[in-house]
Length: 293
Image (cartoon, rainbow, N blue to C red):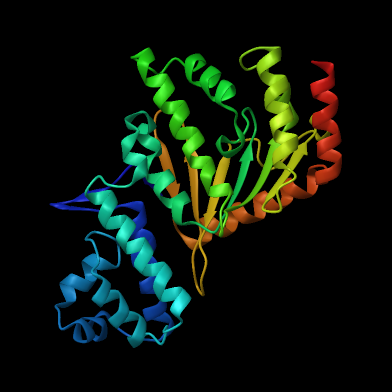
């Protein structure tokens, strides 16, 4: 479990770095190799490999290619994806990337950087509409209502950054989004009736996308396995790619990065999904709530 970015001496572990290092570690262990073998392939020291695998240092492209070759992972798609992760991690450490143009993102920067290279996202939300599906007015009302903005001038840049994230839902390789939202989130009058009517109409439009799945968990379903907290599972493409779980608390951003944690939350998400309405029934419920407003 990681809250924020852990530091060790002058090295900093980032979520992207841990993702990349963790996948290379998994490849090495699958081949039954030791860190000494990796160090030999890199013409480097074992301590260097020991820092690479937990994501404590940025990785060079030639090192990634050499390790993939050593581990028998020469698939072009896998290598390209790992190189992309490494590049984004290096940019993140140097404070580059489009998301860094939005200081209002604050603690969401690490998450957005991951979302930018993910292949799919599964999210369970109890009280709000998922960020990737929010309208500008809804996002603005949320930002103004949560009371965490010291400067009201930060609200509009936050709204802009929220909309910029939604570009991942379109394009040649759009993000696959599976969202389950509790009915109460759709009835909460965030910004008032007019804002919510527009937001609900937007949800109905987004459901028409082939890469977007939206289900509603009705209040009548009663107790469910996700009542303790909302969470998002971020997944990556390629053989052996591991998921990470993201959760926000009132005081910190929490990352669950072990395979056991990811597997646990995948099970919870699947159980919630089975309790939720089918997508066409969910659309009917959304339309009905909108009509009531």
